[in-house]
Length: 67
Image 1 (cartoon, one colour):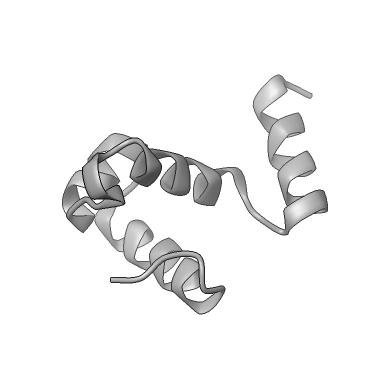
Image 2 (cartoon, one colour):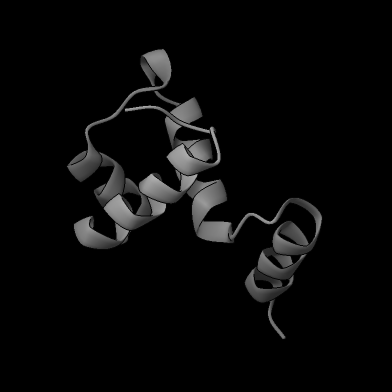
């Protein structure tokens, strides 16, 4: 098992938060006003725009981000 898989499992076990969601939250926190356009966020996190929409909708549902 590599380090990324270990981190993903630890985040999911403790916070029910996949590594991708953590990356999204971390990326947002590093930007002025904690804001980014969805396309820019997808480019920074290196996932497709459709996948980004799905992940952000999930984070919205958990009350962790707003549009």
